[in-house]
Structures are given as C-alpha cells and as structure tokens.
Length: 300
Image 1 (cartoon, helix red, strand yellow):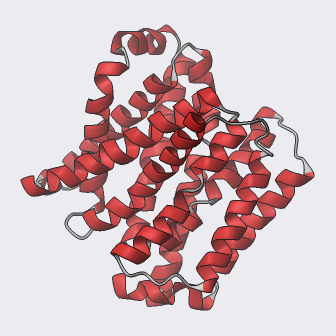
Image 2 (image 1 turned 30 degrees about the vertical axis):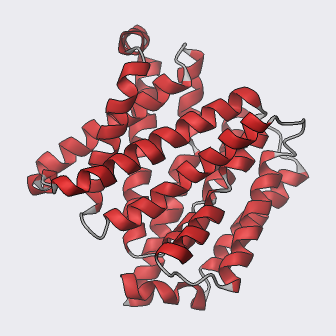
C-alpha cells in the first residue's frame, strides 16, 4: 500500500510539472495581446482563487473554515512564494536572457533539499543528490548556455526567484500538517491575487479579455489547465512525499516546456536540448527506483 501511495504521489507531481511546462502555450498569446507579466500572473491567481472557491462550494464548504493563526502561513505561501517568485523571475527576465533566468529559477530544489534537511530532518541521500544534479544539468542544457554577462542585480533576483519557487514546497509542507490541500491552495492564491490587484490595472485586463475570444480562452486555459490543476496535483502529492523529492520531480516542467516549444512553436531541437531532456528523464527514473521512495512512507 505504501509503495502504491508513493507511485501515485510521484505521478501527481510529474503531472503537475507537465501542466506547468505548457504555460508558454497559453501565456505567449496573452502577452501578444498586450498584457504584461504582472497582469498575466494576476489573471492566473484570480482564476485559481475563483475556481477553488467554486470547487469548495460544491464539494465541501467546511474547507473554507480556517484558524486565524494559520493566516500568516497562507500569506507566506501567497506572497513570499507565489508573488515573490513571479516578481523576481520577471525582473530577472528583464535583465538577463531567458535561458539564464531559467537556470537561476531552477536553483529552487537545492534550497528545498537543504531547508527540508534542516527544518524537517529529511535525509539528503546520495540518490537525491545524484538526481538533483542530473536534473539541474539537464535544465541547463535544455535552457541553453545562458550566454552573456549578468549583473549582480540579475543574479540576486534570479536566486530570489529560485528561493520563492522553492518556498511553496517548504511552506506547503508545514501548511498541509494543519489543513487540507484544497484549503491551502484557495487561500494562498486568494491572498496572492489580492496582493497583485493594486499593481495589475484590472481595467486593462478586462478590455483585452473582452476584445477577443482567443485571449479569453487562453486566460482560462492558463488559469485552469496550467495553474489550478497542477497546483492541486502538486499539493496533493506533497502530502505523501518529502518536499525535497517533490521539488526534484517537478524538474519535469522544463523538459515539457522544451518539448512544447518544439511541437507548438517549431523551436529547434538541438543536441543539447535532447541530452538535457534525457538527463531530466533519467533523474526522474532514478528518484523513483525502489529505495528512493521508502522514506516518504512515514508521511503518507
């Protein structure tokens, strides 16, 4: 039974990475329609919060109830993770190449493994380290060389995006000991949306979405297919799995992003990209072989 739960949790994390990996398919048309990255992020958060509210209204209204002492934790996930990660990532993109920004973003699992070992006493095994370095090396290859010199500000915001990205696993692990996954996702995204509202010029968003059906369809797909569903899958999987291991499995995202770019946008498949995809896939296989999942039984 424990092994079945481990496999199911791993499948949920991988599916989440797949959903995140196709974000570009929906966000690029929104950007072309005139929305900036802050507005696109606000759309994602608002749709997720609304979608979660509808799910809870239909499924179990009792999950709206929380303890006031847990609000700071939800605020931490919503602002320190969801908002902070996006703002830092967007700032890095403005100052550096997309490849370099992506490489810095995927320093997240390093922070998660270290923080999980310190906070939750999760073992840092040779298998985890090997999988992590394989996955990060694959991400570097998939992203490209990231050429060009980067300033100190870009490096700092890039590392900040990795920390913010990793904080979801760390803070989420703590929150899931106090509440259900759907409750956590709803309040985290509700707070994130509220924090972004003063900076996203809602009237402009409304005008763009009202101007044409393709933009509205892409916004809904971005919010539901590439945000709500992946976060539900990741958060549910995180209940049954160590945060460090989950963070490495989420490396499926850059692999899927590379493949979607090739299939949807006819981006070239170089030998570096092919090797990077193979390394990421190898890391996922290594992490899910027999003994790699055993330690998570105590949290299932």
